[in-house]
Length: 143
Image (cartoon, rainbow, N blue to C red):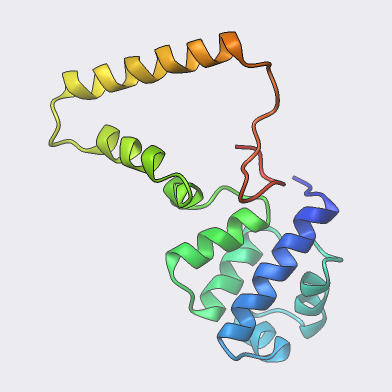
């Protein structure tokens, strides 16, 4: 998988911000994550693209919570562990997703919700021109 220059720049910005919030130097972060200092430097400059494993190692080394790790993963062009973290700016969509995953609701009701979503999607596709779906929060990641 390759991400665009803009994607690398987004990842670099998120990584640097998390590192600075943790008050950790590039050298210390590299040491904690088991990387060479120059690798972290190149990541923060946007000249290197990390692997998913590298992103996860950096998140552990920074001691960030799941939401920040998901933001770092998404900024690097990877799906986050919790897809709902991509929906923080879409509370209605998050609520519907929560309902669909709630086993306390009868299966029939969850199926009705799915059917309504399929119908809504079909109607929108009929009136809206086909275009690539892109996440507004992470424009380098296809939604």
